[in-house]
Length: 116
Length: 112
Image 1 (cartoon, rainbow over the protein chains, first blue to last red):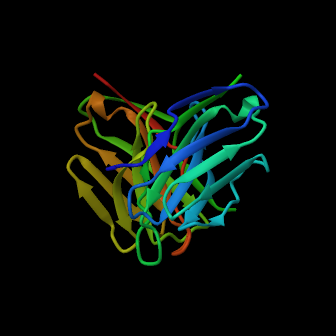
Image 2 (cartoon, rainbow over the protein chains, first blue to last red; image 1 turned 45 degrees about the vertical axis):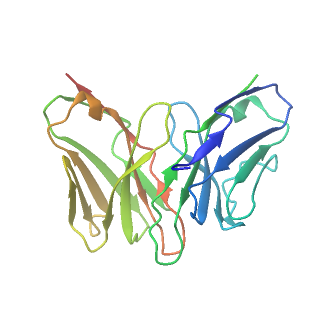
């Protein structure tokens, strides 16, 4: 596709359930990012992939959060045993960032997660 | 500690005036700095990139300056319009091999 896509666009779940969020980056983009944004707040960095490797997982808030990327393309963010404080918009971005390229990021529309 | 600070959470200006948003950083030496626009319910959209050896960059009604001595970037929108109302984020690359770090953003409201 032409841009970054994310699915689902909205997800409502019950506390304690696991959820999986998906991101399809722009074709050919080597870098992929996950952010979280609570209502009215700034972007909170979660994790960054270069290819299939995650050089920086420092932003994952707890061990309930994990992410993987396969084939240098699609990524999934998994939240286990969801809590109400996990409610937020989860944004994915991709870029051509690597040595010598600028990190201009292209964002998807986000997944709005609501934990009841 | 390293910080990126955008001057205010919210800025209100009258239509037709120039909006000026500030981004200050501490303990970074970025090779470049970027500005993004975010509308409610959407992801940020890239607007402009300015490199450390550039003093100023323009795109239509937008102008960005970058002062590495003051460790500051200014983002100007001239002849502002209500359609310019959005949150504007600055972002920088801490070093050559690390990805962007974003500021918290300034919410601009242009009042007709």
